[in-house]
Amino acid sequence: MSAANRYLVSFDAKATFHRFTDVLVVGAGIAGLRAALEVPADLSVLVVTKDRVTESNSSYAQGGIAGVLSPEDHFDNHVEDTLVAGDGLCDRAVVEMVVHEAPAQIEQLVRWGTKFDLVNGALALTREGGHSHRRIVHALGDATGFEMMRAVIATARTASNVAIWDDTFTIDLLTADGVCCGAVVWHPTFGKLLIAAKQVILAAGGCGMVYRETTNPPVATGDGMAAAYRAGAELRDMEFMQFHPTVLYVAGSARSLISEAVRGEGAYLRDVNGERFMPAEDPRAELAPRDVVARAIFRTMERTQHPNVYLDLSHLDPVMVRTRFPGINRVCRGFGLDITKDPIPVRPGAHYMVGGVTADADGRTTLPGLWAAGEVTSSGLHGANRLASNSLIEGLVYGARCGRGAAAAARAMPAGLRAPDVRFDIPQDDPNDRLDVADLTNALRALMVRNMGIVRTAARMKDARREVGFWCRYALGREFANKAGWELQNLLTVARLMIDAALARDESRGTHFRSDFPARDDARWGRRHVASVPAEGVR
Image (cartoon, rainbow, N blue to C red; front, side, top):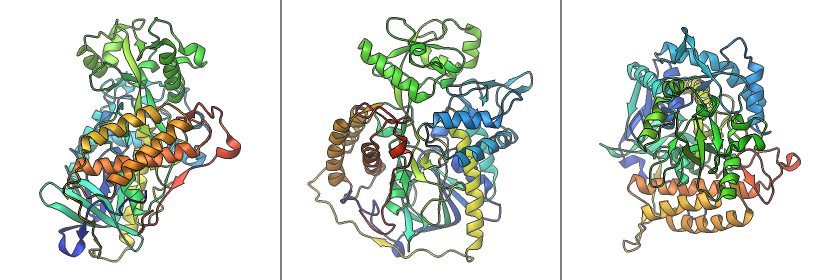
């Protein structure tokens, strides 16, 4: 990306307003707020989020949180299920760490006021694809993320050392002498602003909006990944985008997630002719891991030449269905569908970015001063494919670890904060050379669906790389003055990294399936694809 600038905007630290904090947290989903709540009260924490604090992928999570909470289940079972789903790329030590810490993090959510669903006074547990036991806790039936974030946000708002800024766009991470020392942000009142921090925790979420069809909210534009890349942090596993198998498909409408838990409770997948197709695809049938189910649906759609398949709950107890899935029932009723009787039209959609900023077991990145947690990272937990309901627990475990680590590092630094002496200038654009940001954004998202979807080939990906490379040369060297422009630049950056990684991995593994290399190749590819640029340079 030779046309890319180190920063997306021009600024001079000597002439720009500053805000100082001990710890800066970028992102207010479960990972970011969990990190903020772990920082001791004698250190100041500023949490910035580009939309409302309630608007994150965490808030939209339906299924639940995975943890070993019943006597029939064991840590080894959860570890093995995660390793199997990860298709040979998980870091076993990380998996064991997260699985063992999961129950305590769930208990902390209960102490903070999360009202999980109960059966006879005990946590209700369900099962989802890839899990060998019932270990998924949920809330409000199918609104786990909403209830969990309600409790965590309320707790964060009462913390005396934590400030939360809504509607604050993090344009870039600030670096000086190869160390992350804050961020350049756009604040609704102050405009362009520099935040100087002793330590920075990146929890900015995923990048599902790089695809036209996604379960993610509009905020998921890969801003954190792109900013970390420009700042010099290492990214890895960017070829692994997880597609959720069941996204409500009604032409012309917004896409809504149909939770994994629906299949966990016994729903069947049928083709347009009413035939149940998963038993012939995998012995686990509808409870196979997401990558297996998504590819099976893709093949079924191609075979039948129909734009979707159908989820069938008609054989299940209607009272249980309405009670267990009130949110899904409400959405489907808006389209005249009774989920207890009518087949639900579904197809796969981009759901979760498995790759991201490289983070070690404590959340340290390769860039000094920068920590990372949640979907923005590649921690080693998910490998090549995330096991259902392991994302929220990763955010909790890594958020807590980042909070502790960043606090200790901040405390070890000299007292007081000094504004970094940084200046960056972008040449002014030709005022007559206009770029239609919305049109280019839509074109990129459509291209990624066509050429970087569930099934990939070298020819299609090379076409995508050529097209995205042209757009990068045209758009990344510009200076925009609004969120839409910065988001486009971030989406282009992330798309290019994804395409390059997918072309390099000439095998099929987890969420990355190539029809021209359909077999898994452990001899050559039992390893990671990484990308980075020098902290103060441009590639």
